[in-house]
Amino acid sequence: MAKTSQAILALAGIDKTYDGAVRPALDRISLTVAPGEFFSILGPSGSGKTTLLRMIAGFERPDVGRVLMDGADITDVPPFRRDVRTVFQSYALFPHMSVLENVAYPLRMAGARKAERLAKARDCLALVSMGDFAARLPHQLSGGQRQRVALARAIVCRPRVLLLDEPLGALDLRLRQQMQHMLVSLQRELGIAFVYVTHDQGEALSMSDRVAVMSEGRIAQLGTPREIYFDPASEFVAQFVGRSNLLPIEGAPHEGSLTALLGGRALPGVMVPRSGPARMAIRFECVRLADAAAPADPTGGEACMLDGTVEDVLFLGNALEVNVRCGDHNIIAAVPTMGGEGFVPGRPVRVLFDPGQATVFHG
Ligand SMILES: Nc1ncnc2c1ncn2[C@@H]1O[C@H](COP(=O)(O)OP(=O)(O)O)[C@@H](O)[C@H]1O
Ligand SMILES: [Mg+2]
Image 1 (cartoon, rainbow, N blue to C red):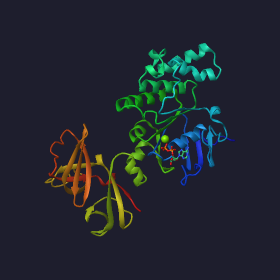
Image 2: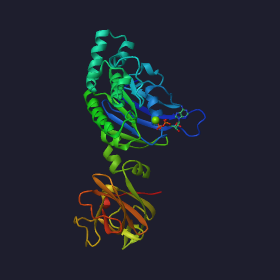
Image 3: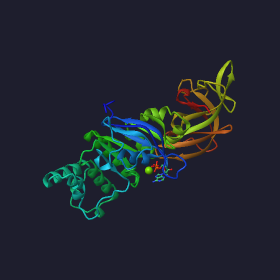
Image 4: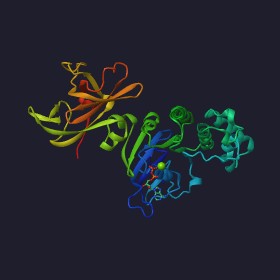
């Protein structure tokens, strides 16, 4: 087959329904991954992420559609002959082999000589900062260390694509953050494509070049982290990625033009293409709070303004999440903790947001 693009990996029109299932696990999935790209698949549990990864690895066969690698159709190529490795959430190290032997194992299977195997395994252990642990057995390591060994073993043969299925899922927050930094630098250094599966939007946003957001076997949105975060294509994406207020609005004539109304109050500048009910998403951190007595937008812009009363406040460390009752609706604002001391339950406040940061959904 002719090479059709510079994609290292392409999925073309993939459907998969498991035997006995009523809904497809994958429904018309098409995507491409560029060489050296950090590509994430983000979605809730059951959305089809693992099935998609198993399709790329060759453990599942699509009912319909093709898998291409470097332009060649590999749909019928068995897993062990694909230039792909997988790292799972469970580390799956061989318990009776040392760390070094574990990492060298794929090279042994590939028939490499001992000196070469050990040298390459040592190099990979150094890449994941585990050089000092070569002689240990897996049970003598912490979870984070074991996952780094699993990673070293997965890259020792330098696959062109590395698949990672929720690899940080079993680690605590601090370790997850450290591992995120390590994965990003490792990926840069190796230059191989990563396809990274996670249900954690923070992981997907922080590490990826592009993210495919999945819902019920379909791609709900595919874009850069910024596109997905600031320009969600659907209510599902707005809710799943980041934290957003989702408010019922009404497009209606007001002072001579079509205007968005929330509980009868106009939100000037919020674009509604037609009259009738719609929903508006606005991120918590895009909502500002000011003194109720403030005469106008204190930033001097053309902000939307609503008056309300603080209902409750969550302390998140560097930010406060302030829940404000505005008429029949609640709007949550994430404001910096420093300077937010005055936002206490019962206090009247003015809620402000830039209409350009609101996204309106119909239907
Ligand atoms: N081996 C299987 N047999 C039948 N159904 C499966 C199998 N594996 C997964 N499923 C179903 O396919 C859907 C997608 O599952 P999965 O790909 O594991 O999602 P995720 O990894 O996003 O949690 C789910 O509804 C799940 O129950
Ligand atoms: Mg899964």
